[in-house]
Length: 178
Image (cartoon, rainbow, N blue to C red; front, side, top):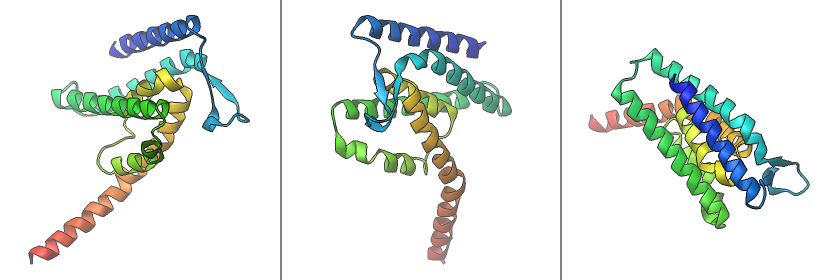
């Protein structure tokens, strides 16, 4: 039931945003990698893509949540924190892009990779928050592609590289105590 309510709200929100953009200068389109010779992607695609990806990501959140304690306060709080963190990061990137803060933008990939050592950026709630944070400025498609690539890299770092680093650190601290 939560999935249906959330997806309905998301669908109505993106339709309202696109309608507002249509009547206030037109719905923007974005060139891939900001290259004029590459194809443009219209924000109208968000009307189709955002409800679908939201449904899929909320389904993943529910299935992961049902695998553990159902609706526990700790899990709900963790989901909300990751969503808000992804949302804030998405807004920060969009704001930096619009205001041409190159220093921050040049380091976004490294920041995401470093961040994936500490939090699971591949979790659906982080991805959904990130997309929502960027949807106003960039539409749905480009932020989704961007975060899905980094979510894959983040998965590899969080699941495989992070444990190696922590095991080395634990071994080093164990040697230092002898």
